[in-house]
Structure formats: structure tokens, C-alpha cells
Length: 201
Image (cartoon, rainbow, N blue to C red; front, top):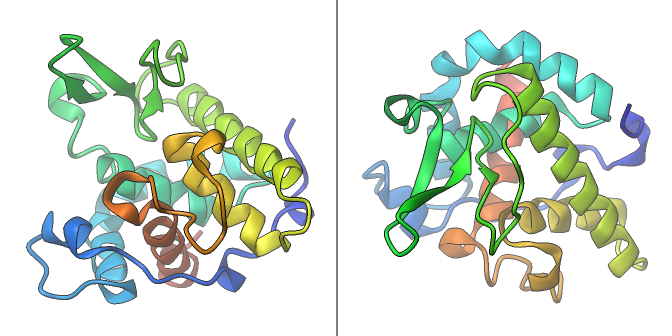
């Protein structure tokens, strides 16, 4: 059992600049920022519906807003659409000749990265539990690393760490400096805010 929901900030209270132009370009969007993040979240909303009950159950168990879990699924695998043809595997590394990530939330399996062993099927509740547990661990690590940060900052920092590790989070002002696209936590937060308002989470 994870932390209670009161342990973390309300995702609606987290400040965000949304998606970078690089991330928005994936969907050929002419805009960037929060608007782009919201458009991408909405694009994935249909595919997200079949996972909604699992997401809600796991969110309750780990004290993480289901809208945030949905947002990570949207960012990482576009509700499974980018990985279904590879049986759940993503982020192919030609140097290793292997995939780096697994499942809807793309758990890092690279031995030189997160080094996690995939649990459950790629769409399974077991996978969602593993990935959400990893997220909770990173939020807690960031909370210890930056005790003076407010809850909203700690939550955002934990989201960034989910992408690149807590060792690469050095300051709140540049929380996404080393994340994929230079916007990971900002984009995920903006998507989560959309799912919170419109996604029935």
C-alpha cells in the first residue's frame, strides 16, 4: 500500500508551461505549451478509456491522482498506441540492440538506467502498480533532496525524476533541463490537469 492521497499536492495546483515545441511537433501541432499538452491529452482520451478503472484502482492504492497516471501513459505510450505493435516495448536503443522501456508507463529496463525487471503484461494492473510505485519512490526522493520545496514543487520534481532520475534534478527553475524534450514534467502536469477536468479521473 502506498502513501495516502493527502501526502501529495493537488495536480491542479502545480504550475506548468506545458509541452515544448519539440514535443508538440510529434503531433504536427502549430502551438506549444499548455494548449499543445491539452490537445495531445485529448487525442489519447479515447484509448485511455479502457484503462480507466485500472488507473483509478492503482491511483487509490498508491495515493497518486489517477489523472497523473493517465498523463504519464499519454506522454509515454500515447495510451498504448506507440507500443502495441512491439508487444509493449518502446524506446529502441540501436547501440544495445534492445528496447529500453516497457508497458503503458514505459518502465525503464535499461541495465544502465533504471534497471527494472518488467512486471506483468504491458497493459496490466501489475505493470501500472510497478510504474506508479517507481513514481512514488521518486517523489519521496525529491522530497528528501529538497525539503524546502512546497508540495507542488516536490510533486513536479518527482515527475521529472521519473523520466531522468532524481540525480538529474538540481533546481526547481530548471526542473526539466535534462528531461526528454526539455519539458517532461511540465507536459505531464498539463496533460494531467486536462484529464482531471475532462477525463473522468
